[in-house]
Amino acid sequence: MSIRQSVVAHLDLLSQPSLQLEYESQVPIANVHSELVDGFCSDLYHPKSQQFLDAFSEDELRDLAHLYGLLIESGQVRASSVTELLQHAQWRRVVAFAKDLAATIGSRK
Picture 1 (cartoon, rainbow, N blue to C red):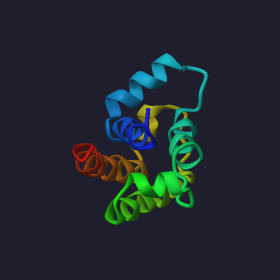
Picture 2 (cartoon, rainbow, N blue to C red):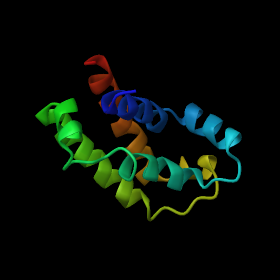
Picture 3 (cartoon, rainbow, N blue to C red):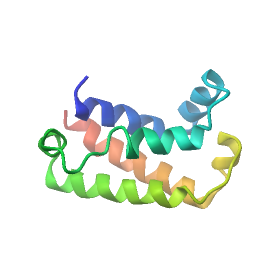
């Protein structure tokens, strides 16, 4: 799977609460919030990697950087479940932004 495909797949997860709830049910011992944040911020977002830079347009890179910032800010949220997480405005901003971003990035394969 290419870096672009991996990012789009993670954007889909971030943008759909139903998928987040499903993920939580599949990995009940994990801190889903941390997994969702780290999955993007640590595993996928590498803005100094040429491969990463080549996979996205300048506008997409700017939007991915904004998503990174939203995810880092959401680290302040304390929630023991996805249901609790979805009650926080900071996380709902992540979901909304990821939904818009998934629509634009996902359409340009």
